[in-house]
Length: 80
Image 1 (cartoon, rainbow, N blue to C red):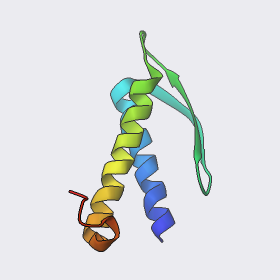
Image 2: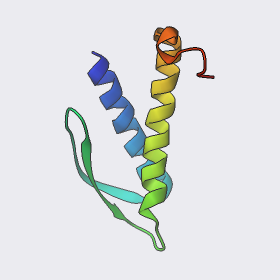
Image 3: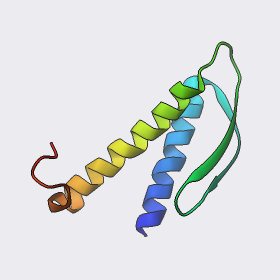
Image 4: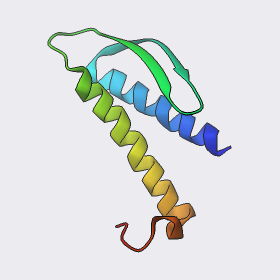
């Protein structure tokens, strides 16, 4: 179940970044430890790093929020 949750976070993040930065999603595959995404920009100029940062930050924020609520001791006392 937890893997399905994190996979969905990634799918949601890719979809949001695709819409925000005007990319077409051509294909994706989610592997156990990483993902492959093929996107195509529909407007110029474009910067793929904006797209990737958006995806990574979205997933990281959701994961952190989940861990804070489900297992706060896992992060230790230094995690804000």
